[in-house]
Structure formats: C-alpha cells, structure tokens
Amino acid sequence: MALYRAEGVVLRRWKLGEADRIIVFATAEHGKVRAVARGVRKTKAKLAGKLDPPAHVSLQLFETRGDLDIVTQVETINRFSGLRDDFHRLVRAMAMLEAAEQVMQEREPDPAMFTLLVRALDTLSNKPSPLVMAGFMMKLIAHEGLEPYVDGCVLCEEETAISDLVAFDIGEGGTLCQNCRRGRAITPEALYIVRLMLGGKLGQALEMVDSPAIHEVDHLAVEIIEHHIERRLKSLAVLSQT
Image (tube, rainbow, N blue to C red; front, side, top):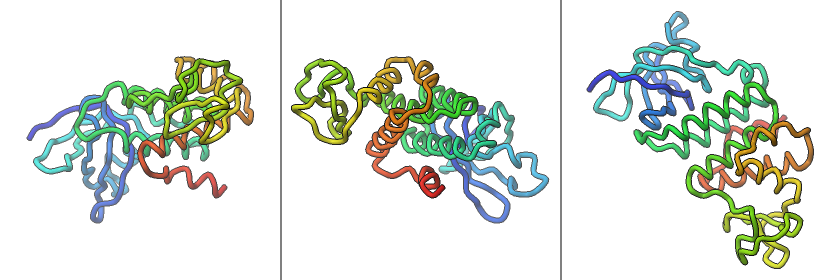
C-alpha cells in the first residue's frame, strides 16, 4: 500500500454512508480507478465541489488492498465551465463519461483514451455542436479496434461512389451498397461527415452549420456505441424528455 499521483477525469460518483462518496475516475496512468472521498459531502470539506463530474483533476490517492482506494488530495485542472452553464451540453458530456466508463478497463493504463476524453470535453465546453459527442463516440470505437468501414460496401467490398452507399449496418460494421443494403439508411451528406470524423478532420466537421445530416450522424454514433457496450446510455434519456 502506498500513495500515488494521477491525472484524472471524474466519471461518476455516488453516496457512501453519511458523509463520503465513491468516485470513479478515468486516469491516464492507471486506467479506471474507484476511490473513496471521505467527508466530501460535508459543507466545509476541502474536496467539496472539486469532484463533480466531469471535472479534470490532479489527484493523490492512497492504494489499499481492496477495490477502493482513498482520495487524499485533489487539485482542479479544468472544471469545463462551458458545460455546466449549458444543460444540453452537460447531458452530452455525461453520455461521453458513461461510454468511457463502460469501455475503460480497471487498473489498465490507456493514455490515448484518456487524452481523447479530455480533448472531447474541452471541445464540447467551447462548441455547442452535437458532432463533438458523435466524433468522440466514433473515435472511441475506432480506438477499440472497431472503426466502421465507410470507404465502400462492407459486404461486397467494392469501393463505390459516396452516392452509391445507401445504408449502414451496425452489426456488419460499415456502409452497404444498394445491392447489399440492410440496417439503417444513410444519406450521402451524413456519410461525408462520418468520413471527416474518422479521417482526422473532426475540426472541419465542427464548422458545419446545423443540418439534418448532423443530427443523423449524432443518432448513428449513439447507436454504434450502445451496440458496442450492449446497453443504452442512460444520460441521453433526459434529452428525449425536454
């Protein structure tokens, strides 16, 4: 047992006893970490307010023999104020945290995934586009080695013009041509956006004005990540009620 330091993002928290909380962190150095923040629910607690998701923090933790470490110090790196001032962006941020928690492994370092999450949260804090969350979901899937195939038909493997690719099958993992079509329909405009995202041009996609194609990609990205984690993203249910 020993003290250790980590850079983390608060993914989730829940109450423990009368004054404590259990916090789930995504960290670059240690993967997903669960820890107890003692006394954090007390009004005058030093850690109060520093461990609200989706805070980006510098941590000191005490490693125990059990499943839960102990938070001993916290310094805020970024509170992502732009998210806290916008309900819809905050909900999308929570959905990204939910997806990251499902994908990240306990105690397995994954600096690339951590960096992807931090950058996505920072971008979303500064831009209201729904494509930020969609881009994160697509890149998360790609990071898992399951990048969708969108350069041709995933079944017959013919590289066709973008206008000839008319459907996307999540189970098959990519686009399909007219002859092989099944799954959900996809428009050329939406497919163009997906190609930008997966081709490292998310910034270009984020400059697009709002359109039906953007919302089509938004829904597609959610369907893909939910298929991968085999569960619905509970955070997004709030948006359907507003």
